[in-house]
Length: 121
Image (cartoon, helix red, strand yellow):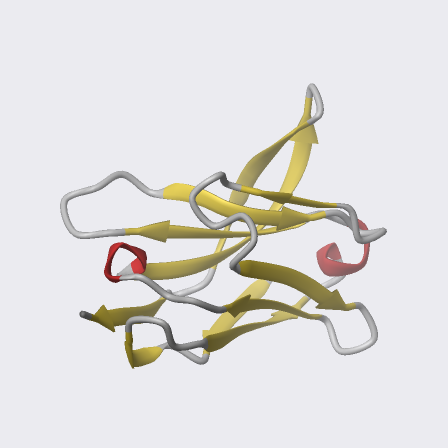
């Protein structure tokens, strides 16, 4: 059984930084890509970044150059370092275990409970 547990969210001023962590249990972590999604108020859930099992990364244009996704396979943990945060980054952030379809990240039905990130102006 796969379990994903996020931590690290909070309230931060614009321009600040936060580091999210997602601890995974189950064998899926070592073989599958992992992704971070977010869902802002009144918005659809969107992919923020993903990372393959070998460390290849993808970023949404809105976070490119500000966010960094990484993973520690020995600790079964994936991270999202968020710098230069903006009020529009305010959302619930979710960790996901996924796969690749036609070269693009596709989420599997393994989600964490979410962690709230609030950026004040």
